[in-house]
Image 1 (cartoon, rainbow, N blue to C red):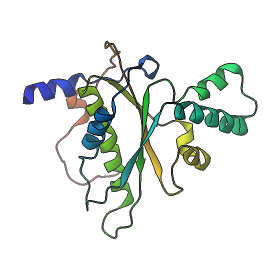
Image 2: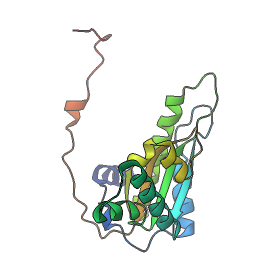
Image 3: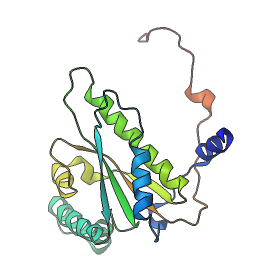
Length: 195
């Protein structure tokens, strides 16, 4: 079993969001994915994340809101640009917003809570892939604006970890060059010295 898990991890890819199609996951599969997503390191058991499901008609409403918000920021949008915003959340059958929820704790820094949210997003992607779905995560411009976060259902103090797009995919997602382990690891050699 360990070998098959390693093989799974070493071959995971992110298919293009535009290729994710119906059918999306069932209610029981979504519950399984969220259970898996929440099984991450969480110092202090703070649960510093939550998940927002964007599905059905809500995806189109979000797109309309994003198009209006983009137009308010950029001025009149041409057809292609408007279509881009209208379809941001409707390309895949399910989009799961992974949201960082800050908790007040004197011992645990906010950055550590945010990292836990990143782990939750990765577990969600692994769970979706293990169930046979394609999954891809993005953030985009609306994650960095208070108006965008509010439109997407986040409280003022919450931040977007990522939007995980999930749907059926025939496979054959393009791969990209991956780094050689020797290029990204080293043995500890003492404190950092400037220069």
